[in-house]
Every structure is written in C-alpha cells, then in structure tokens.
Length: 362
Image (cartoon, rainbow, N blue to C red):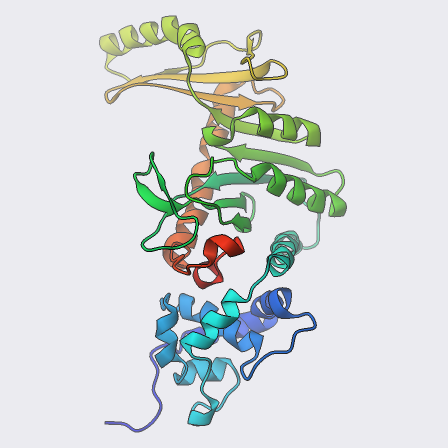
C-alpha cells in the first residue's frame, strides 16, 4: 500500500485554473463574507471552494468533507501542502456553522453579484458589443424534502413535502441570473415580480435601450405579472390556463380538425384568427392578445393558450407559439441545478429562515 497522499479528483485542478481567471469563488466569498468580519482559522474563500469543488466532484453532502478535508487535491486547490496533516481544511461542523451564519444582507449582496456576472457574460460573449435584446425565462421547480426543515410544506399537485424555488435564466447565454428559495406551497409567481423588476432595473442601468423579453409558463400568466411587464415596457410571452370561454371560442375549430384527422390520419394544428379577437378576463385591466393552439393527433386533442404583447404576435400566431415553446431549452438550466449542482439537497434545517440554503446551492 502506498503511503503517498492520493486522490481521484485531479480533474478539479482544471476548474481551479479557470476559476482563478474568472474569480467566481473569490467574488462569491467576498459577497457573502467580504465585509468587516474576520475569518476563522480557515478562510472564507477556502471554505467556499471546499463546497463548490466538492459539488463539482459529486460530493454533495457536508459529511463528505470530514474525509475531503485531508484530500491532497482539495488542499492543493486551497494552496496548502497536501502532505502536511496540520494544513487540513475545514471539517463538516465548521462548514455548517459558517453557512448558518449567512444573513439576509449577505444574500442580497450575493443577488447583486449574480446579476453582475450575468451582465458581464455578454461582454465576453459578444466581444464588448451591447446585446440588442435579452430573454428572461422564469420558472418554478419542485424540490422534494425529507426531514424537518423549516417551511417545507406539502404541495398537493406534486404530492410531496417540498420547497418551491424560483429561477430566472437568460435564454441568450444560458446563464442563471437569479434563484430564490421559497416555501413548499408558494404560488408559482410568488416574488417573481420583485425579482424581475430588480433585474430589469440593473440591465437598463447598463443598456437603457435594450429590448427585454419575459417568458414563462401558465403559472406566471396572472394579472400581477402581466401588468408589471407592461409597466416596465417588456415584451412578454406567458402561458395561460384554458377556461370555458376559450374552449367555446375554439370548439368549432377543434371539431373541424378532428374531422380532418379522421379523414387523413395526419396530425392537425391550427390557430384561430386572433388579429381582431383580443380576449379580456375579468381580472385583467385591458384586453390582451390571446393565442390558442388547437391540435389533434393520434394521442388525442390538445389546446394550449399563450398571452403575448409581441409585435405581430396575432399576425403570426404559429411562430409566436413556437417561440414560447422554446422555453424547454431554458428548463435544462434547472435540470443542471438539480442534478449536476445538487440544488435539490436542501437539508439544512435553517434553510427556510435564511431564505436560501448555501448547503444545497452554493
């Protein structure tokens, strides 16, 4: 048996080199603890890197760091002598204490950092040329919980105890702009108005004339979000729930497509003319362009609704709907958060109190 310090995670050194150039973990640590507070024996940056690089290497549990604190690669990442046991990294209890010390003010600084990094990404992506438009995709995702975490509640639709985080991503650069942890029975749009307003204000402070699109599913197609987008001068494309009025409006077209399908066995898809038909629900302040997709195929019938204020939306309803359906790519960012960054490991019992759980999403 070799007495030399060994590790199976040498690939992390590549990430460490890139991180050194981009300063992601440095900025993360500065945002959370870079004020007047003095660090303990282990620096804030070293502990952030322990958790971040641990997750990159598929060590999502803090308990893993009772062994990883002596791992030579993790010690090299922190600039320590891998052969010196006196230079071991922080233990699990130390990491837990530090992460539970995060305050709301710390999280607000972290939110500022996330948006700053989002804005900076366009300089690298476009070579310093300001973007002509950006698309912000809002989505809520279920995060099943197991235990006695604060504000984990039972959600009837998902049939589980959970948290219900809200994420906002950029469609053009595939980057996470903001993520908010919410209690298990939150409505899909809860807090989305405040988050969207904050991002728009930050973006327009840099690019005053940029065109901004907001896109989300039917959980966000509510008067609060519609009114906000119109107030801020945003273009939006939101899903909307089918209701009896819209069903009556599209019933004749549905029957026609069913007959055509029966005759041809070919899938049928149409959009009822809406250039002169703007639906207004009772809770809305004004009529809005309402696009209804009516579809008949071998699996059955399907009617879906999209609300939009995009120019030409009513003239080209098919294109408008297809662009809305592109939100599926943005949903991959949430899959990455949950499955690759272990964002669904919100096991800290103080998560609800803090508003975010660094143990799960650092």
